[in-house]
Image (tube, rainbow, N blue to C red):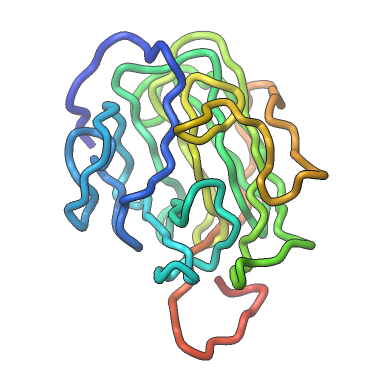
Length: 232
């Protein structure tokens, strides 16, 4: 994987909401001056994603994603193969990292000093299953998006979203802040799907390697399909 440019760490929070990425398309260089695998182009933040990182559009919005109540519009990211999805930030970022997620199983992320998950591990964060007792819009099994974040010392240049496949979704990934936000309102820690349970966006775990957990997410669209808790 190549990165197009490098520089100093980002000075202000950057929020990636993935709107504009095609359904089931690899994000690739959508945020890196290039395009996703379907040819769509986003803002050039100098950020690229591994080819396993796919856009997933809410089924109710015409896509194939078994998701609901997304924090921004209708597109999230997930991965369908391999053991991880990697995000590289050539210029680096500091202070914190945060996002919203929805998952049926536990998962985790790791923040690294170098590109492609190299160098010092700056932070790691375990993600607990959170989709019980929520409802879709009108459908979507992955219907609760919880805000989480970590702080760290130093400059981070990559984040590894690790685990099994097809059981976790991410949205509004925010670089440079411990609170995930929307492009018009960076740093909003409120969970839009459950105002009584906003989660803990300032959790700061010790940097350590965590055991792998089963993950996953994208659903195939099919008319008349029945919802199955163990299939997405």
